[in-house]
Length: 191
Image (cartoon, rainbow, N blue to C red; front, top):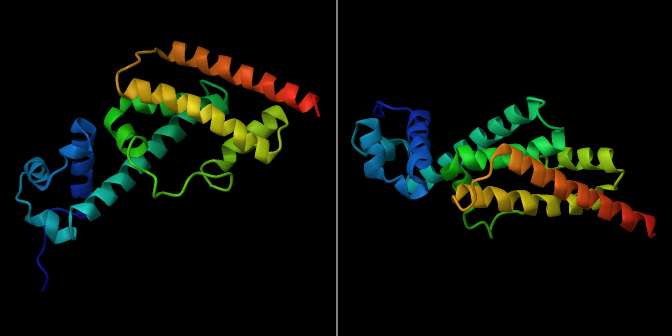
């Protein structure tokens, strides 16, 4: 009969996620996690093959938390839907700095890049197309340029380089969105 463990995989992942949120990804060691659980490291390695498997589970849990955060922020109705997605991304960087760094400021060259066919991006591209009349390919380019700006602000906030209020962020996003839509409209009129 296999041994019965005192903790579930979910409890271990939850504790590891809390350690990450407190001290970053490097804070999650077998020893630190065991201390957080009030246990030895044995239950961890009884339920996870190794630390890499646990790290993948923590990354998935962090992404789940991020997705719930974004969805909640976007349904508040505080901003227009497309702007709400950018504001939410930046708020997540402010409120969950270490989880933001884990998700968006790590080596990702081996990961698939987001594309217009990605389920997370497609609704945003549809919003852009609806609001501006752009075709999907143009909307994808527009979104990439906006996202670079939004990600830059979020990164500077997550690293404490920038300390902007929501009002400052909102104003900047409005300014850039307006300038970009005018630029795309001029480009369209030149055809």
